[in-house]
Image (cartoon, rainbow, N blue to C red; front, side, top):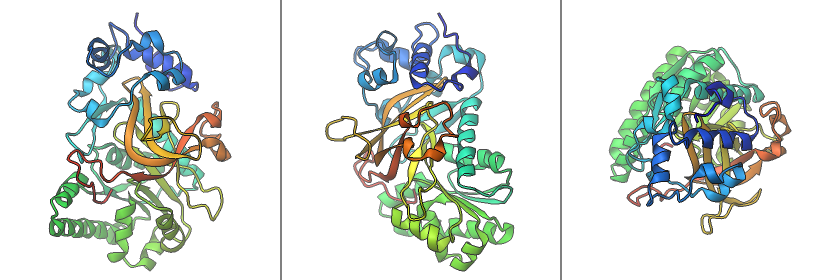
Length: 382
């Protein structure tokens, strides 16, 4: 029997246990589920050695019974195989996003317009919490819209802020390939080219909102006077996760003179999580919270595989539960501290109808440099 929950109803579910049941029922329906997951159930050599429909009733069941998945478990999967057949019957159109391919062959995953719209709703709420300016030109320096970050920057941010977005494309996978080869000259010439294009937009269009990675933003004073940056930019969005508290303090206090700064942590597979506002003026920690319950975070001890407690550091694991794509317990190449949304009372309006203690966030995320597929360091601008 096909899942009776309409697509729109999935996005209204606040209770993560109820969402877990509905998603398991949908994706593992033997007649109308997703081809990828039904193959996992049928394959005796797969990591999945049980039928989730028989075992999973709650999110805690999912945490306990599902194995940890890695990037390699999803490589080579055709995008449509993630989507349940019952969804494909009703929704022929979805947006396929691909990973950057910096650690191996790109992975492509589907996003329904409803999922994209939900991510944009969360983004807008977090921007409002940071008192972010609207209706001002945006300079975006990053990947194109074939990757999720580029799509959300160019299409989503334009709608959210009611602003034109001027993109300067950066090919992060090409950069990392050149750096792994030790070709610093080509990297430096390419970055000069990127900055030349960015400077052209900055001087001609006078954008007052900046969206890029922390590493690229750190490079800007080499090309644009700090006084000019501070005066012209009224709001900053940074992604790519690699930002220390010291750099955040530098941006906040010296480079952008206490203007709003919002961090985005995410990837193509789960979308985006957003930085909560600082708890006080001297708070430079970066706490990211997901589009819960569609996406949930956990943090595990990389040595034991056990889930850590609040305030403990470990490796980030996410679960995505959307109608078009189910990805459980996917381990990331990132280390972070587990934090609870209950420490940020101002998030209650964002997670209305949800106990904040249930929403897990990640603080001060750091990338594991040694995690490329060939064992070489992954470097670059992200």
